[in-house]
Length: 175
Image (cartoon, rainbow, N blue to C red; front, side, top):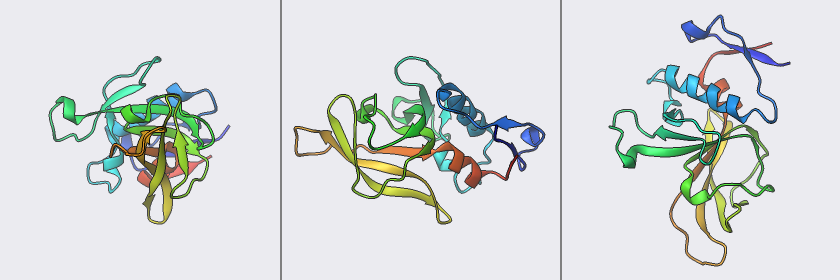
């Protein structure tokens, strides 16, 4: 079973982490939550680590803080959804309109203008890539609209690979 160490965070440097497998969305959420608390604020990818405040097995998986320097006012709270994988071919089981960030262990490759849909007849397009030093960490879904309408909302959803985000954010040693 693949596992890794996070070498550059002293409190975690001796800890062994096992790579999540399909069905372990709760572990993906737990791992993201743990690392969002220890990522140094001067890390260039700090802005992608939204600190979860809640965790649920039903509905939205977590409510998180968008920007740490702000209070816990409603405009600073975001929704986080955890998945093992993300694929444009699979219908997303939550409303795109109420999600802010989807954290998956990994994703199927997508390109700009690829379509994503949810179970409530909303759809969006991949409008941008989230990259760091040439590595694709995820995507941005924009142009979200009801499939029967022509205008879109302006709302955007980040899709992030936790595996790639961990590798880009920390010193990792795979075993």
